[in-house]
Image 1 (cartoon, rainbow, N blue to C red):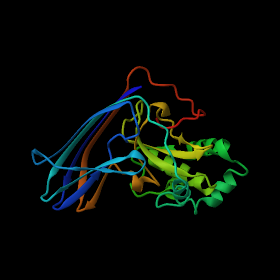
Image 2 (image 1 turned 45 degrees about the horizontal axis):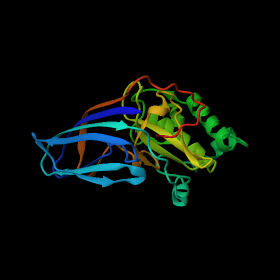
Image 3 (image 1 turned 30 degrees about the vertical axis):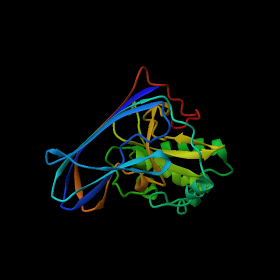
Image 4 (image 1 turned 90 degrees about the vertical axis):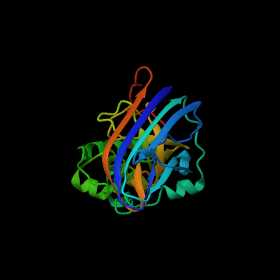
Length: 267
């Protein structure tokens, strides 16, 4: 499998701003990854540091001292599929706990009322169908700080809201679940995409209640408890304003068919 992904970001910063980018394809043992990254500010290349993140994710960190317009360009050509992931007991504990945007403790009564007696794959499929039925996908309908509870009350959201709600309902039933940011060939409208992953029968399975792209072709960028761990752009000092974002993701040949009931892992 050969996949090509790109991302272009334009943002302006305040003085003394430190920022972090999570836009690189995760290092997961592909046959080959050819990539290029450019971070330009005030007409010249900015120096940056590449830092390891959890589950193979990689971060690009940089600083500017003066107000600057920053242009980021990233491109990667990925050959092959990722190696199987080793999951620790600590991971399984971490991903069953409530988190900032996935309030599984508050949604426990809902999960037990809606999915009585369900376990394993039956539970995962029921959660996917329920979230798809209860939420309506509306671009721009939620804010970056909305949580799973807020999405459920609003009955609408974007991909991260669908993923947060699925993760919360699964954790409430003691299923380890996490959020993954991905490049998604076939996604319309094209953007960074967020999906849930559930630990079932010894493997992480992709749960995407939006159904907007085939899961087989998705490429992992970052992974964590919720969107707080997987933001594509964040500041760790100062502030910035995002002005433009363009994302691309294509696969060589035909897109794989999407069977929502199939067991799929991010590869």
